[in-house]
Image 1 (cartoon, rainbow, N blue to C red):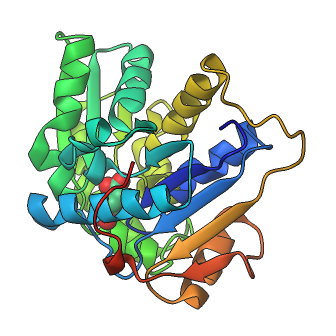
Image 2: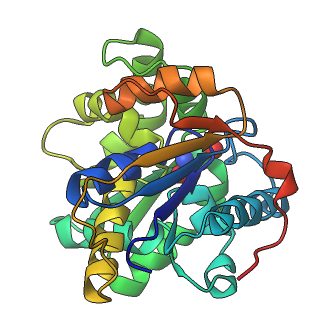
Length: 275
Ligand code: DGL
């Protein structure tokens, strides 16, 4: 089982924030990534649709014989909560690792959560934070335009449109003075430089993709499930839209040239999870 790959999925590019960190901290692991680029964004859809998509994504990864599944997606983690009990391999979403990290960082007891509309509507991060420490004040803000900006490559730190959008959504957070801000959608760390510049250096930004990568690494280590082959791991990327646009944008974010390791799949044929 140790030498089986780790499966990671998201609606699009966002989950790469988790993959990038996994590759850094666990360089011998093979990774299968699925980005549902044909159906992104998830965050403004109904709970029913998000659950259906999440089960299909997990079902695809199961078909690849993975030893662990990471929903590197705040939206899926918040809405498709039954997924964990329906899988017979280690599964984690982003909520718990991210909330735990944020609580350990805040000094003034004010944490802001940025997420998709579905994530914010679910109240998931607030619940998770309050379970760890009920005294923390939680400020929430949905930022529905961030995902399309990222998926369309508006990620350069000088991009005026993204800068204006960041100001629009974060004005209130800045005013209320949270010292810790959760980037609760995995797409958001891709524009972290712009968010950080607007909020100021004294505000700690918590990257949900990265926090979850560390959580998965800890689990695999504690359960003696780390790859033991001793050779550098490979990553394969699967997408539901064209390979070409993913190669381009993911390549920019990962700072490498993607080629034959990007494949297109028809996600609609994956329906049931077969354990
Ligand atoms: N990256 C995902 C999240 O963390 C999904 C964003 C979307 O598709 O709306 O919420």
